[in-house]
Amino acid sequence: METYNIFNSDDDIERFISSKSDTLTTKIFDVHKGQSNVTIIISVDDIKKIAGTFSYYSFIQDKKERFYITGIKNLQKKTNFLQLYIQHCEKQINDEEYENELTKHPENYVIDIKEIEDVNDVVLLSKIIDKIDVNMTLDEASEMFSIDTRCIRKSFNQLAE
Amino acid sequence: MTQVYGAHESIESMSANIAAKKITPSSPQNHPIIGLCIKYLCSRDGFAEITKELNPKKAQINEHSKINIGDRVAANSFYVLVKGFKKKEIGFGGRFSGSHNCNCFTTHTEYTYAEIQVPYSCGLKIIAELPKNFISPIKQLTKKKDANI
Image 1 (cartoon, rainbow over the protein chains, first blue to last red):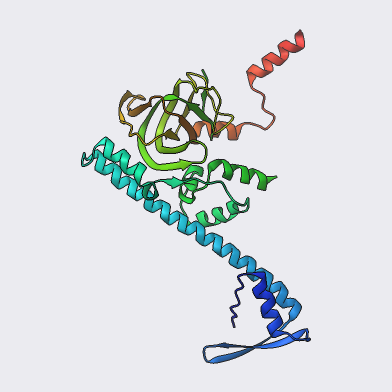
Image 2 (cartoon, chains in turn red, cyan):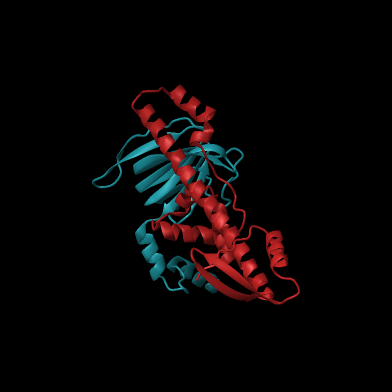
């Protein structure tokens, strides 16, 4: 028995509650999943609690997705740089062409290192790295997820306090 | 002239000598402080030594960085950020240890930052085995001298 209610904002939650509840504190919802019909009884107070959890969950999922996309983009940039470097080493392009390519098309090669938005992002990052199951040094993680090493260190210190 | 071995210890300079058994360019980066730079990974033992100090002499990335001429970081693995996209010629650096040679490169008039990733394992073992209330013998001697005075 599973239900899927994902809310993107608090307004969505309020709209959902107001549409489903009139003056009653308890409401019966019919959930249709495939061919089987399941009836769930939830009180309105419970819905508010669950809705809050769902909205936080979707917020975390969004953040995770952003980190994954950044990681993939940065790996792509590293590959591009490696190809350019090999071309230069093989003398297919000269020094000038090599530097010009890097300065004229930074979007293909240069990894932007940014400061961290939220201290708790570090916890999220450590969970992602755990899933990848590779030993990463601090600067490797910083390079992969575009986060400044100083910020990661500061956040860890703040969380430890 | 000081040499540092600890994790995340760093040097900052305008010019530096870098030597390690394995040096590989990693990626070009847009760093929030120094701007466009190229990152080099130096592994399998190596060091980075300051040959020219910063002007003005003030650390930019890490306030605890060593910035005097002759200061160096030595570690099992460290990374180097060199400002600008100019390609560095990584050449043969001669004998590094008893049976190993090393590679090396020099930065000229470009901001250079080197930070330790993985320190020497012997150093970590020593630190792990030291008791929490450990006072080095030199400090103990100086304390005794102060007490006698």
